[in-house]
Length: 337
Image 1: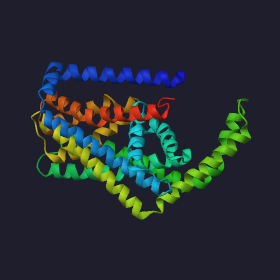
Image 2: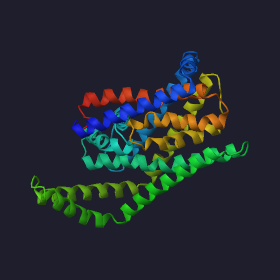
Image 3: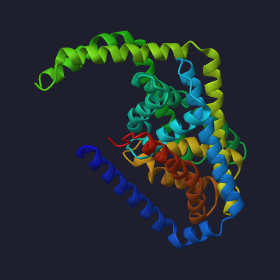
């Protein structure tokens, strides 16, 4: 790990711990701890079981996408590879944006494919997750609005999420539309810039980058021309989001405060918007976002909401971290390089 990455990880980790500390003090740390320890163990286990099923669903999604580019992985291998990708996302700032290069290297290593193919696989999973997530937000908020008034905080959260997703979608669309121009001009620009540093062979850099970009866009085209696989991938994405929402609802039941299922449907994708922050995997920010969303929409005490969120995050953050960390370590991939 270089010094810049090390400093970024340390600063992000300290910031996450600070946010969690402030959150615990604000809601009452003693009440949170007491509520967690008093939670129904069977329902806590069910929450973790649903978290495992979510991880499996999205690993099968990765397997489906890779199949479109003739990379065929056994179910177990795809599960461990995706868990490793989640680990990489959770230990680097800015979530998927920070962890995707490591995830691509991991996928390439376990599949024996090119790095660009691994990058296409994990990036496609992230992009395909967008449509089901925003659909669930609108579905959940619509169902919630039928029985209760939509508060200002929830309205702002929905607007921010829609704006962010629209921005990302626009950037992706523009990148795809002008992919040929990018593949032709970017290598020369990068090669020329690095060549001025007198430490790089500009021609070699340009040639290598051009080849990688061509391979990257070719693989994306192959994924896009497999409608059955795309439909299957979107279905698995929707299943994964629904399993996470179910895990959140069960976590609330475990602490003795059930919530309406429609609240869980919109809360999960909305809170994950906080993952696009310079925090490792959004740690701290996502927990705070959940509490900020769920206290006014459920009427449950802040300490109880925090306890339920901790149980939920144990299932979808810490458990995949453990599984993925072992996978990454065994394969010898540096997740914070």
